[in-house]
Length: 509
Image: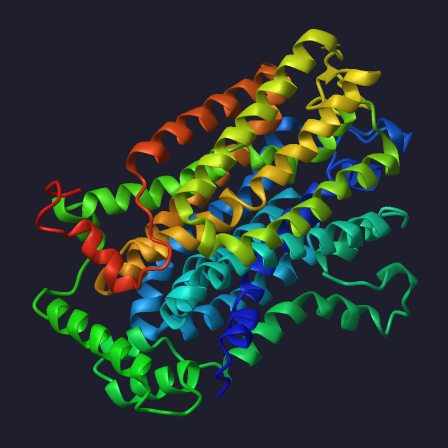
C-alpha cells in the first residue's frame, strides 16, 4: 500500500481530471464547422462555413447532459460510498467512465451523444463527491486544504489538456475533428490504418483505467473503516499515512482516540438517511455545504468554461484565433490554482471566498457595462452564423471584454474553484459526511445542468444582460458568505463538528 499522502491525493484526483476532460471536449469544438455540420439542426448547407450547428436549445441540452448525469451520480454516491467504502466508490466511477466514453466516441446523432454524456456525468458525479471525502478523511489538518483543493487543480489540467488536443484536432477534416478529442486520443484516427483505429479509439479509457488500477494500491479511509468496526485496519492506515510505520506515534494515538470517540457517539444514533440532514441540528451545516457548491456555479464560471468561444466570437475573435485566445484562459486557470494549493491553509476559507466573490463581481459588471455601451445586436444569425453569439463589439472595447474574461478566471481559480471542494467535507460529522457531501455536490451539478442549458438561450434572448445576472449572484454570495460561513482551516474534522454543536452558542447554528 502507498502511504505518502501526496501520492494518494495525486492518484485520487484523476477523478477530477475526468471532469475537466469532459468540459473542454465540448467547449473547444462547439464552434468548429465539422461539429456544427455533423449535428446541424435542419438541412446541411453546401458550404460548411454556413452551418449553424445545433440550435441554442439543443446545444444547451447536449452540454447540460453531463452535469445532469453528475447530479444523479452525486446523489447515489453517498449510498455507494457508505456501503462499499470511499475507495471502491471511486473505482466504480472509473468503470462507468469506460462505458460512457465508448458511447460518446461512437456517437452518430444527438440522442446517442446525450446518452453517452449522461453516463460519463454519472461517473463524474460519484468521483467529484467522494474524492474530497476520501482525501479529507486521510489528510492531516495542516495539509487538508491543499490536498483536497488539488482536485480543482486536476480539473483545470484536464480542461487545458483536452482543449489543446481539441484545438489540434480542429485542423482534421470531417467528423474525426471532434471524435479524436472525444476519444481522449492524441493520434488522429483518420490518419491511422484500419487495423489501428479500434485501438486508438480505446485510448479514451486510459485515464479511467489508470485511476481504477492505481486505486488498488491506496488505503481505505480510516474513518470509514472505524465506522465499520474494522479498528485494526483503521489503526494500520493511520500508521501507514501519518507516522511512517510507528503505531505508537502521538499523532496516530490522538487521531485514533478522536475517531473512536466520534464513532462511539454516533453508534447511539440509528443509520442516517438524507432526511437527517434536514433536521434542526443539521440544517445550518447542510445549507452552508449546499450553498458553497451552488454559489460556485452561480459565479458564472460556466460561461467562461463551456461557452468561452461564443464570448470571444462576440469580441470579434474568429476561426482558429478564437480557439487560441480561448485556450489562454485555461492556462490561467491552471497557473492561478497553484497559489491556493500552497497557501489556502494559511489564508483560511472565509477570506478566500470573500475576496473571490468581490473580484468576480467586478469583472462581470465591467463586461456587462462594456458590451452595453460599445456593442450592438449582431442579428438573428449571430456572429459567424452562431446565434448564441448575438452581440458584437469591436476595437479597444473588445480587448477590454477579453481582458475582463481573463481576470475573471484568474479571480475564480485561487478562490471559489478549490474552496468549493475543500469546504463541504469539513463541515459534517462522520456518520453523515458521505451523504452530506453527496447532497452538496448534487446541488453543484443541478445548477451546472441548469446553467449549461440556460446560457446559450440566454445569450440569444437577453444578450449582454447575462453578465448582469451573474454579477448579482456574486454580490449575493459575498453577503451570504460574510454573515453565515464559519472558518474551518487548521481544525481537525472533529473540532469543526464542535463549532456547530457548542452548547454556549446559538442553538442549531
